[in-house]
Image (cartoon, rainbow, N blue to C red; front, side, top):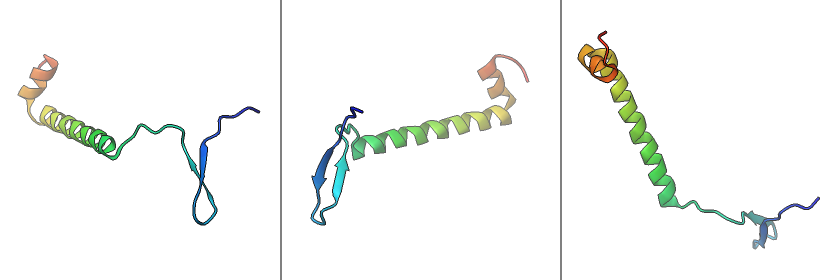
Length: 66
């Protein structure tokens, strides 16, 4: 089998630490993506609560009366 191998680096305790060949993630990028997901979920929850609570909001969103 011809497999693609990751680079290996020896640590002081002689165990092989396997590192991926590419890693495009950064701490800031991960934090930003997580924040966007949380904000979009909160917006969705607010719209659902407003839709279920106020008939005028439901009519505005769907275009149909309750």
